[in-house]
Length: 64
Image 1 (spheres, one colour):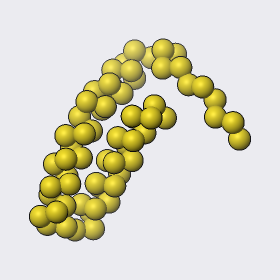
Image 2 (image 1 turned 135 degrees about the vertical axis):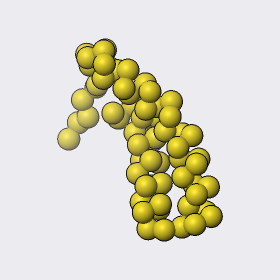
Image 3 (image 1 turned 90 degrees about the vertical axis):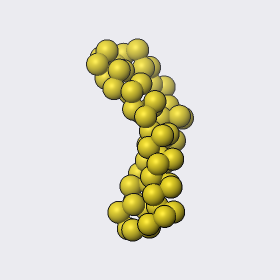
Image 4 (image 1 turned 180 degrees about the vertical axis):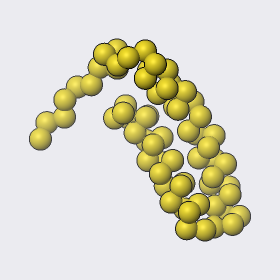
């Protein structure tokens, strides 16, 4: 299965704005959640941290 090239300029302007805002805030949330997980690890904290890391990687690699 070949991955199709995704053009970000075909997205609506509001969706590009949401993507840009998410990409700015995901790293500070990952850092905060990582510190919180180190201090008081619960199952929810670990799952949330892993979801934030996956989201950050997807935004960085421009998958979404």
